[in-house]
Length: 294
Image (cartoon, rainbow, N blue to C red; front, side):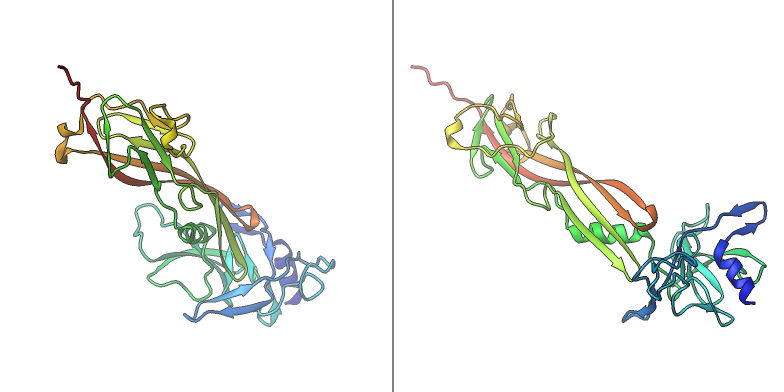
């Protein structure tokens, strides 16, 4: 039995039907951790390779680590391609099969690696199986949620509490902070697996409320009274052609939308990116220029 397990653990190659699952990279767990909700994970403190002998594992010789076994013999606790060892099989969460329900958990069970009778089955469960590690994508979403990203912290001249004039330039800017412009980095982890994500604003599209828009790739320059009627050097609007009295409520509604690019990376070469658009609004009063004649 020992020789059979050693051969299987060394290759971890499965032949299932006509397909071949090649030997994966193996992570070696050092101990089991269970959280307050009863979810258990295998903790990998030091990486190692099977029979490495170079001190890569915490037990000094690679090996399978502590805590996982099959019929009394040690086996790898975590295999990225197949998931977490549950005592008989490796379990891994997968995407819902086409046309199947999208709630709950779809689980791929890879069994029989060490008995010489490999097989794979897909099952659905309303609850996560004990010990199931969250995917790298799920951890990435946790990291992104922790950023608390926001739409622009709008700055505008004329101020929303004042009024501007038809034809005069409008200054637009975003009051920069990590959550309104970035970069901002957050990590999310469970024992044995972690992901780090970084978000950076790429642009802000300002919809001016009159059918026109302005796209700025910089946060913009805050207006100072000393600038007079000059145009913004990096983010502004040339001016309204009609007064806001022509709009419902007597004001133009300005919507500023930040496009964020978020990149993330985790262990085993897992990485990805996604875009998020977040908006803020304000209003501005624009009056007609009065010409006084005698």
